[in-house]
Length: 610
Image 1 (cartoon, rainbow, N blue to C red):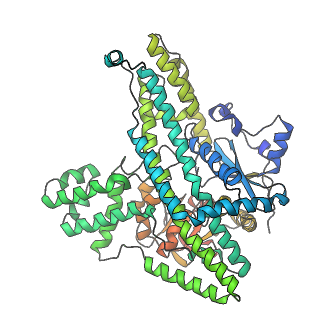
Image 2: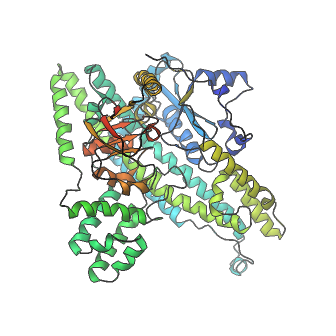
């Protein structure tokens, strides 16, 4: 067995030509080389690269969501619900890539006291889940509406006369600054809500896993995840809306119009007939809110939603139309998944020897199934619907910076941090107010060009999987469930690295969904490439998101570079009964389209066939 070793965070590679990159990011994200106490702390922790959320380096503005969950997850763990064995998750950045570390409770004698608080506080949420969740939906819909209604004003040459006649007492310059503050505040507030239920959702699953593994030491983790499968969640709704539109197009006889040309051409052509107009009406109705689903994870500004690029849903719609025209069923096999879920649960329950164990099993399984929908549903409200609106509001702010020549292009705004944008806006409005020349045009255009060069060098660099000291145990539920990093999986990681370095015919990842299949590879790095998928191919992708859903109609199996047993690809493959291997680290670079491979989703292994 390979010994697992990682470089010191203070000896990590520096990239020539990027000196000074640290000024692009919050100062507290830097690894310390001067303070001995901070340096010793960082040396002793296990920092792993968060490729699940950030498969590419961070733009200075886009790090806002990392800052937001740095605060939100940790506060719920440590200050609100008091997770017994785990505090928060600390964050660092190196060469533009995010590294995180789960913080264990340093004194084990504190755990019983924390457990008492957790059972009382988390127990209240578990016992009142439906009522509190309905309240959460209202809060999220409220801030999404507030975000949509937020006006980002442009600066006029002369204020409207009503500023005088109505005694308003404020200028548009102030309103612009205030709107930007409100925009950022809504973003941070959204992420406060994001984690209100999420840690509890993962914790319920972790408790169930722990109970099952103690009761059945040999039980595969996938069998446990299958017992909470088959639950309807709204993150599937955008995909279900496309299926309905495909069926409606055939019913109305307008499928041929939908099969050809750009989205603009299709929508215009539909206006030429009564049935086309009926289909168009259904299409437009589906857009609010279901087309606010991102084409990526929603974590980067360039992850545009379907409403920003209607060619994406139209292309996906055509996959379903092709299937329907062949007479194929395009619905998810939910009943089969539920039947297998219930069969497994009944079988394991039967093996238990005491009524007390069966009662605990029933309670924990019921709780996991109750809370699990939130784990997926929150993604639509936050990373997709809210983020899609938020990115475009920032683009409205950027128009003012372009107008005043602070930056050359609207998309240049992402190379400034949120605090730098606020300072730039102060420069804009004070120069506007006084009629003087702002300093920003002398500073930001060349700084942005330099940062673009630095970011490109970051992209060409391969970040190490982890840095620091391998821990004895991992107890933080988010780390366990989402990234698939557990005390046991550290051994698997060592095996993965050993095989990756010494065996050119195998790739090792983590089991995502059971099953064994053989077939040709199709590497898709973005959702726009899924139109190239052919029936029976095996999808290989960096990660997947809800916009990838139509791909699962064609594929035999899925393989991802990043993710754990509860990542999107693993969940969807279990719902479709497809094998999945996740968290391979390098499948998209090691595999080529057309190669034939064998995928074993139960073992997490991929064999490259001759």
